[in-house]
Image (cartoon, rainbow, N blue to C red; front, side, top):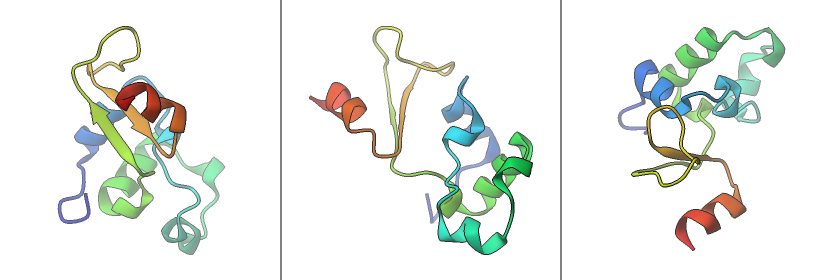
Length: 93
């Protein structure tokens, strides 16, 4: 992710139907250095910022495919964002 940052299209595919804010790392030192107000950012601005600065993508970010059941997003991949212990346990046992 740092050697080849995700493109806006790749980020959109991972985001699927969830809010863009779910993948944006507002607690990142990189975001704090910008001095921006999180509430003022549009989805397009956040996508552009994440594709330009991978540290703004919330991690870990895990895409699991294929999906079984109704847990997937619009891409057919299940995406786990952040340290969601329950989601990791469900996905990996």
